[in-house]
Image (cartoon, helix red, strand yellow):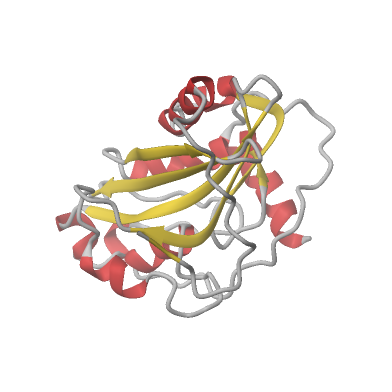
Length: 231
């Protein structure tokens, strides 16, 4: 059962009959599994973009560079792929869930998002396993379906039987403001007691003068993410 986000979204793609293309499903699962070690770049096109809920689209290499600090702060963070359904237009609707676990170290700054010290967060962050809702994403692929060309999330969530239970605090705050500042990264920061304010307007990624199929260093990602946020 999919619940729409409270903000207006484009019509949902129409699922096609039968299972998803095996190559596309494999690409999605490898992409999500490689979020933190950078291996997602190997199953993404050179110009792939990723659109977290409440944030503008980012080149995948930039996104991966920003995830390193998150994994350092939440060492047990685990992305879960619940299902991959192919649509008539060739895209796939993907249900994913982020099991962040307990915060164990300081979070370094990530582009426009501030650093957060472990000593400053509410006690819940270090004593409670943080688990986020099952999110509804749309993924597109290259021509042969072996690489992800884009991934996009709008804040919509789904109910999946048997999925890990969402942490009550996160369930209570998710997408309640109507400006997407309380979904995705915004919800992570609310969990840590920090409000990011209104979400930036979605915009196409800026033209990049470098190859972005590799994982960027943390410092490179900070520079480019700030450029995206400033546009």
